[in-house]
Image 1 (tube, rainbow, N blue to C red):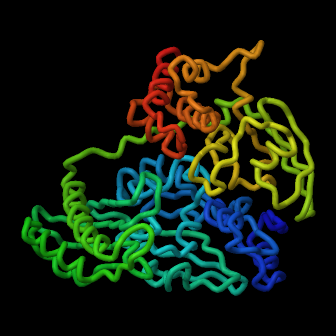
Image 2 (image 1 turned 45 degrees about the vertical axis):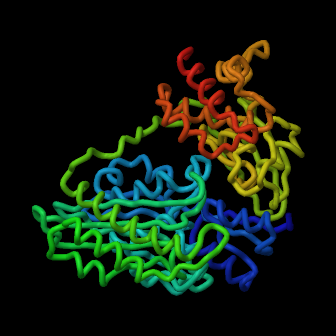
Image 3 (image 1 turned 90 degrees about the vertical axis):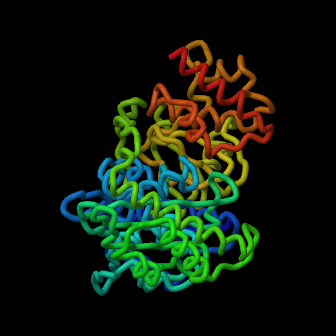
Length: 470
């Protein structure tokens, strides 16, 4: 990996000044799940990364008359906030199927939008909800409707120094329903096509209709002409079929490694039809709210020792202090190192494996403050003041195995063993949050971990056995 400086400003003005100093050779980084992949692959080679994690002004969720949230709001928090799962269902649904648990634990909604991907899962729900984005730079703040934000693949309307600071969603009217649907090659892959619908129903008549599709044009699309077609009409099978046909004509997909133009066009119509149907059902309250458990404070579960992060001016090397497997650690680390490299190369904890380097295989999974993360994408500087648990940290007194480890041995979940440490750490995070998961919840909890031996049945059985012995 190319060496770069890593800055952790505490106020927006410092971030603006750093970006100006580097004159286009620096990159803002939020959760890092996109930027760090591109750095690892040498797609981008910045002189510096400017972390936004320490900017308190970019965090927080305020479900008042309007829903406002900071751009650094984690997908994890959206997924678990009742106000989203109750009133902004399409966004909660999109977040719940985005990538995998390890990514959702650190990725942010602002980063997902600023990345400018036509397939961004958050874009269609926010477009049908007519979100307003707050962009702030050295010259001040401005408001931009989300429909005007995207300019092309990887492009948006922001100037280089600007930071997205907040997102505002209008209050949902009575009779509002929304839905999000997505299809991809595999569970955690980016969308081949995604779609969102929002309706306001008065009995059987649709008063307001908002529709959007992604991954089928250079930017996420609002299908305004189809919205006009639906508004003021009763939602009938014939109307749904007409909306589907119109969506197929409206999109401009391409053929690439993920799909063909013809398939994307066909599926666009299918997803718009199904999203409309689901939104109408949601408006009629024909199904309850998403059942997503809100976790307890993870710090209390992991006995994290409170530590102060030292203010160190060096952007290339510094001593970081954190808790590793229950023990206080101080170590000097270079700015370009990831948590994976810190654990394996500097501290000698080899149980954490290096797999894809892209946050897709989960072999490098560890717990940071009790939640699972991909250590290959987690900047080492960011663990200062935090608690890290690796597979070695699960051993009890006398080197006794954790019940999860024992269950994996007894039920054949180990197999070749390469993926096992990451798999166990993901399962541990799941059980810390949800001590009695269903099989479906177990499978979702380990969805960010790939087994190269394809033995998921034994792995799931191992986790179920560990649950029964808790």
